[in-house]
Image (cartoon, rainbow, N blue to C red; front, side, top):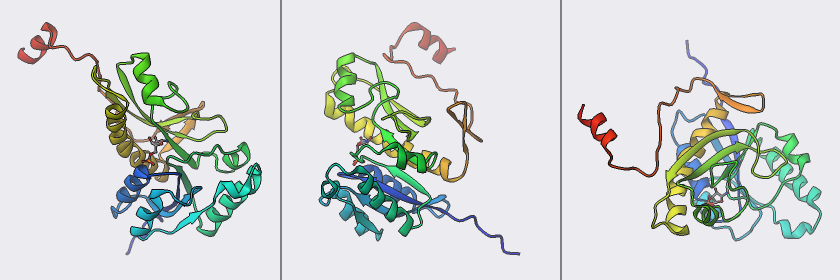
Length: 233
Ligand code: GRF
């Protein structure tokens, strides 16, 4: 008897610029077993570089230019919702989408709208995260994928990834290493949500079937006596 495969979730990726996270999601979704398909890439900026990349991958694109709506955020969001419905969207991924959404639209997509942020939230919400991390002197920095709630860069965390901050890092080198992490955690987080493995318990995400992580990550990484003992027995 043929077993019916569960339908893939239809995803809209919202971008404003280069779209490298969008490209990572598109690439991940090409795997036959991936539980989601990218059904729409939508930009609020007509010139977003990511649009051409999406089209080259054969993905439907849409532009909802926010400048045409002035201060009328409700109409702008109605146009977004219209596109979501036209493309029968199940999940929305914000990927460098530089517009704040009202609680009306966010509420409508509760636990179905994800965002990626280039910092280990709740640290460094907002813009210029890498410069601020360097200025603060943190030793570990990274990226977070979270469900979107009305408050900016908040909402239950689904996945995070960390990198060591190096003494000679500048904003560019640090951003590049964090971006590589973003491209890993966003496809992971989307897959978990699409599989229905993310539950919200007391305002936090619990991931069904995740292994307990044994990892510890200490920076600075010193070649000290303890490590020699551990290595050498
Ligand atoms: C990423 O760093 C993302 O975390 C942030 O905006 C940037 C978008 O980059 N929200 P890209 O367009 O995905 O390349």
